[in-house]
Image: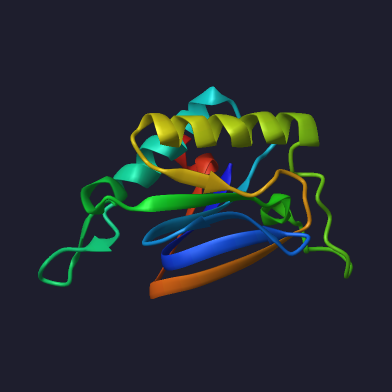
Length: 150
């Protein structure tokens, strides 16, 4: 699983011009799922992301988590995070999970983050979406579950 997490003042997603989800101060996650991803990876990501200390404390240091600041989250599926551009000019997406598995892991991530007490909004898995992100900091963190076994 690959996650691009951005600290945001706001973010929203539209589908066919209609607002599908939005968040205020918090995080916007772009989520890619790999074929071998399981509940283990999803649980790790959910726990890591809600507790990651990337929000400023009163001294302006990144020392608070999403839970500490009471932030919310917008979670967007994005299989293109598994694009392989090493050969040719057209990216290959064979490293991304098939839609059925990808959607199952995406929905599980949304569920696990909500269970940890975070308000979550989403796009629609597989839809053509327009995402607007107002990144604060800017702070952008990349998480890859390939790294959890190292």
